[in-house]
Length: 177
Image (cartoon, rainbow, N blue to C red; front, side, top):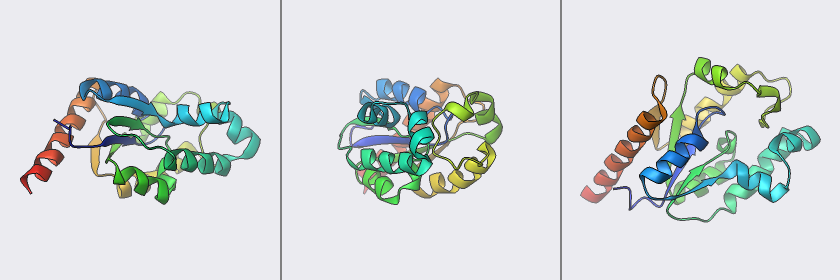
């Protein structure tokens, strides 16, 4: 199913698997895939970390918001950057054209996956720890999510299957109205 859902938008922390799951989900639902971090890097012609190092994390957030607001696609899986949820305008734009799926991964798992925290291009305050960033962002992800998928202990295929099942339930409810 999932044909009546314009876009599937993945949100979550760095290391949650948005890009990896996004590719699998695009294949499973016969959709194109967009990674907004790559759009930012392409538009700016430099890595995310260079933007943070040169101009600071707030400039990266502003660029991300601009890229998200300029994104007009249909029938795509969109993997957003971890800081996308800081922009209410961008999240409302994405919600108008899709279903927001929060990949909920616990802090310990994220920390085991992120080995390059200092060089990953994260839009965070310089003194902010990963745990503080997690605590700050989790509430935003939950606020904007239409679907939350608990990912801890699941492999990529299981996560993808859970997302598809949740999307099918959303679509079936919409059709029943």
